[in-house]
Image 1 (cartoon, rainbow, N blue to C red):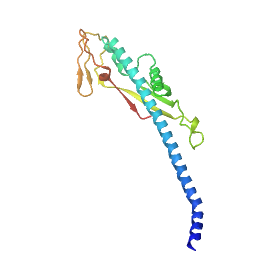
Image 2: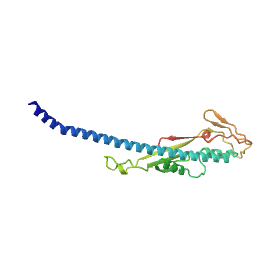
Image 3: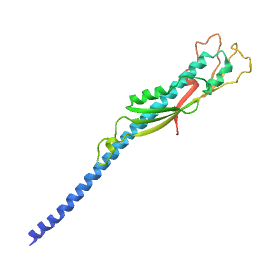
Image 4: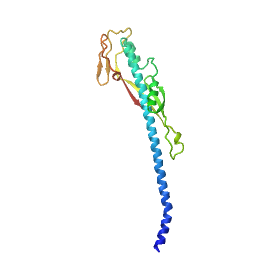
Length: 199
């Protein structure tokens, strides 16, 4: 009597087993879709971070070039360190770096010493059990700022390049510049720091 009853119980349990396995498979595929989306989102954030930093570093280098050009006129230093000088647009570097990270970028200068970038991945999340993911592209944004690292005593009107102000920089680094020997000047990273900041 136990034989037929056992086979009957087994037959009743089989649909439940199939349902459980199907549910577990669905959950596994759902987790895979979430993982794909997370990887895609991470790629977008990487592209945005790199693009924003690239634009800020390009502007930093342009600012340092302007400072070197006007180094014998210390009355112009303040505008350079405040970023308030006319310079070419640096957003092209953001677009270039984003493309290298397989993304497009929308870049905007955010004040004289900052850039905001929104990056969109070129590739979609891909096909999954979640409808629409094959057309979904991740987006992320980043903001990079340029921070002056040095201070100096601003000269009065009529100042000239015979005596240059001392640059007092972070980490207790001072620069006493000789207007007659400008072969050893601070590097861009000595004058400005570039870093990511909260949006």
